Structures are given as structure tokens and as C-alpha cells.
Image: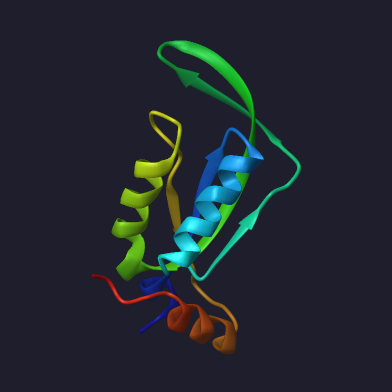
Length: 112
């Protein structure tokens, strides 16, 4: 199986570092993700919400997971996130270190 068929990096933004850390710990402890990186310095986001242009300072999560766990990860992020419509964008991993990808696959639990 090619890496792009099996592994994903998911982008999620949070309104606070506290929430970002809570989500990161939760999805790793549930084995929905092998690793979550948090951008500590806030990013500035511009977006349209309910017909208005808005901006916010947010913290970006980079979540490493498998395609098999993606749907369950999305449900959990939506369940515990404070946003009405949280960002959840999955990008296929087309290549990577064999050892790292092996660890990633072993670290993420099997779907239930």
C-alpha cells in the first residue's frame, strides 16, 4: 500500500492554546492519532462566517493519523471542539521515512 493511501496529516485550528492541548492529548490517548504538533505562536486567520469577513488568532494542530481512523478522528474533534464548524482538513502523506510511517501505523489503534 502506498503512503498516500494509508496515512494522513490533518489540519485543525483552535481558538486557544489550552483547547489545542486538550484536543491533542485526547486524540493521542484514544489512539486516533500517533502524534499532534501544536503551533505555539498564534496564526492569524481570515475567513467568512455568517456573511461577514472575520479574523482570529488561532493555534494550528498538525495531526498524524491513518486513513482508517480518519472518520473516527473527525467525529471526536467535532465532538470536543468549541467551534460550531471546526476546521478539519486531511492531506494524504505521499511519502515519508519508512521507520516513521511504520511507527505511525503501529501507534494508531485499529478502528472500532
